[in-house]
Image (cartoon, rainbow, N blue to C red):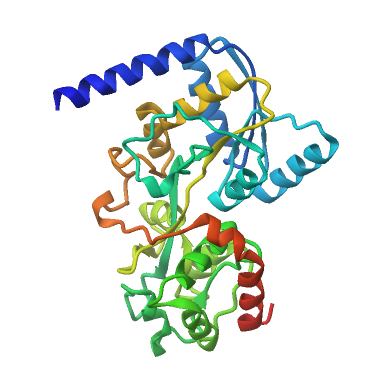
Amino acid sequence: MKRFVLATLLAAGLTASAAQAATGKLVIYTSQPNKDAQQTVDAFIAKNPGIEVEWVRDGTTKMMAKLRAEFAAGAPQADILLIADMVTMEGLKQEGRLMAHSGASVEAYDPALMDKDRFYFSTKLITTGIIYNTNAPMVPTSYKDLAKPEARNLIAMPSPLTSGAATIHMATLTANPDLGWDFYQALADQGANPKGGNGGTYKAIAGGEKLYGFVVDFLPIRNRLKGAPVAFVFPEEGVSAVTEPVAILSTARNPDAAKAFVDFLLSIEGQQMAADQGYLAAHPGIAPPEGFPGREEIKLMPFDPADALKNAAAYRLKFEDIFGG
């Protein structure tokens, strides 16, 4: 224990020294909600007053379109990319668009959440599991419960053609040998009609139009605390997760400031901020927000971003074949 504490203090001291040395302008492209992004930037600047931060926010798809246009023009502007999913980051890594941060402190984290070569780093867990209306006749505990007669024609779910989280969820579940594509066929047979994003799915179930479905965790968990007639289930098979990874672009103009930003997000303070914003922190030592179960009760299903990237087109075609595009 003493050695662990000493190592932690030494690491904190090294990180602090690096942060103090970082100055200049840092440009961040992010898909965080505006409020979260501003809070993140403000907290980072408070720890690094010598760094001036400019941030640009949009959804991951639009953010990547902007970045791709800048790549094509030979003038990428961002130092840091903080977006929704590891699959996009894996693609950028394979293209040589990311800079490794070998000094990042990730020893406390689940290795499955971090790129083994340290090109990108997960900062939180936004899981997808089962949502149900509390007036529903069945309380599901397994994904397979959605194939029961009680759920027929009562399922809402976001479309992987629209939602990044739904895409990750589909890739994760179909890679599970106990579920696979047979499970998605069962959903189609149940009358499920995937469309739109997580917000529309949540509204359909909270409003009673549908009673069961998939959605990102924080929507039902936060709104249940406010009295909404919904509940979220972490199924026995586990949940999928988008992890809001952060990465430094290989073309970063201020790599020292960029490394300081990554270090801040991975620090205990940065991880506690994620929890305070209402998300599951990626660091296993940070207590979940109100309404969430303990981390030991949350099972993450295996997910391989490289495999998901490789099979993305095939997954889309299979989905369209089952649900009719």
